[in-house]
Length: 161
Image 1 (cartoon, rainbow, N blue to C red):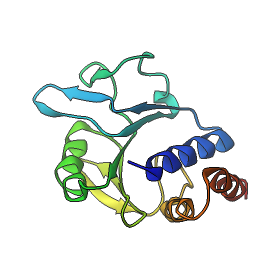
Image 2 (cartoon, helix red, strand yellow; image 1 turned 180 degrees about the vertical axis):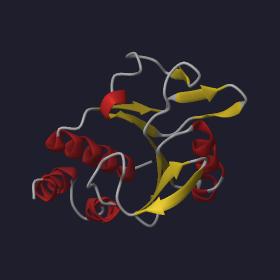
Image 3 (tube, rainbow, N blue to C red; image 1 turned 90 degrees about the vertical axis):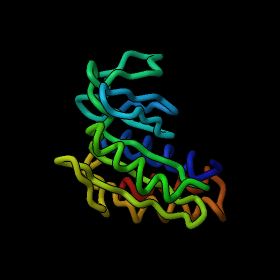
Image 4 (cartoon, helix red, strand yellow; image 1 turned 30 degrees about the vertical axis):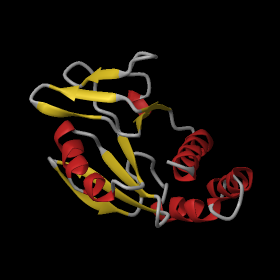
């Protein structure tokens, strides 16, 4: 998965901390709902009122008992077409609010808002208000030429403006 994975997580955590947004992240967690295929996003987040919804240490989450995550992220190195297609449709079926695909090869995030069983592309996150996808894309690009400490300092400066 490489640097794309960690830089995006870093950006989300810094943004939430600076903006006072409650969140809890899950990595490689399995989401199950009766009658629907299960989903295993690379990273997912419960945000705001849902931040504490899932007990610590839970790796398999029954969506008939618990809410769906607010954000699911796939890190696409060789799986881009599947992540943009079938996995996005699965996130729609599971009721996830927002779905991001990180295209590692092109340092590009495609973000989708999900509602009413469908999805559409967005340029600003709805679940992390005021976080622009273009800023995350720039962080990805910077991580190819700078170390993560330098990218962190740049992100902090951007988020504090």
